[in-house]
Amino acid sequence: MDSNKDEADRCLEFAVQFILDGQCDKAEKFLQKAQKLFPTKRAEDLLSKLAMKTKQNPKSEGEPELRKRHSISKDGSQTQQSSNDFTKDQIEAVKKIKKCKDYYEILGVSKDATDGDIKKAYKKLALQLHPDKNKAPGAAEAFKAIGNAVAVLIDPEKRKQYDLYGSEEERVQNAHNRQTHSHYNYTRGFEADITAEELFNMFFGGGFPQQNVYVRRGGGRWARQADAQTQHAHAQQTNGYTAFVQMLPILLLIVLSMMSSFLISDPVYSLHSNAKYSIQRTTQGMKVPYYVKENFHSEYQGSLRRLEISVEEEFVNNLRQACYREKNYRETMIWKAQNFADRDLLWRAQNIETPSCRKLQEMQSA
Image (cartoon, rainbow, N blue to C red; front, side):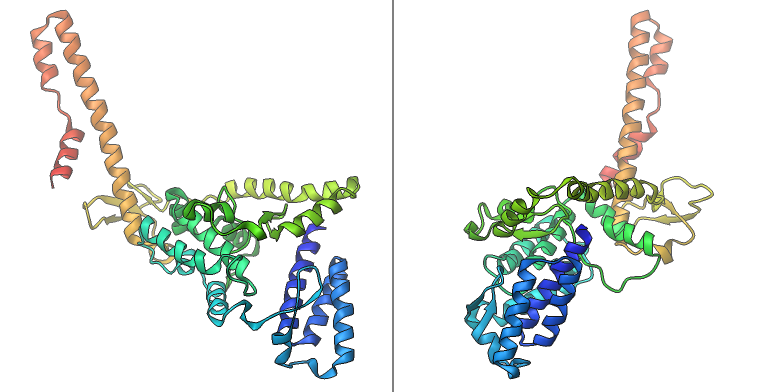
């Protein structure tokens, strides 16, 4: 199953990190777990090399020199590695991203940040975290996290939905679990229509040399080109059952999309009072009245300033549409009066009131 393979891959990543840290016992546990979930030659090779290393050097557990002398490459082979492959600042940058609770914190901007501020913050972080430059463990996941953040926050509609309800995956997950999560993994999946690497190239016009090209797997995870080629060769040998299993993520995506349509909440506000929206509020800028539910203060967690900007924009758009209809009606009546040469009708048509246009003009001149 794909879920077992994804979990096995995560166990392998933890195992490699523990080997780098010299914690061979923990590495062995994660490797054995990975083999139980989804046996691979890489995990088998790492287990055998780990057993050989432990036999040759029983004191290697916790030995700080291990990280300086050796590392485990992606294909499971042991290579000489310098401690200068990644710096302490690079590790700290990755850890900082992993501790973040929302997209604004990931980019280090406020909820009132402009598109320019968001793009500037992304460019700074992308240069620090691009996997071709930052070799620290977890840099690829951190790079995807900032990609997710900028993809949502520079899209006006996605940002509005995120401010009001959070990310779509988080809403679906909370609907299933019905419990509070202390941490949400913002690197899962990717919320843009293009890949993280393509998004990076949009900002930097080409990016770093692509000796380590990143490609996308069926489950939304990322792998280097060499891993993708290995996976492709393995897929050619699979039978009909494996092909069906590979279709499961697509079926799951369809089910989640259908479920999300049932999870759409009521609007936060209304421009008209009714039984559901009975509490009146007024925007600070244009003094536009709007109405919210009784539980507004306890339920709404977004930016009040951005909400009031949305209220004012909707109110002004409604006025413009009403003004257009009023002018169109008056011009139609004038044309009819002139066509029939009816002076009385012409006088009445010329004096038809346009209250929406007057209100709109007053607001623009204020």
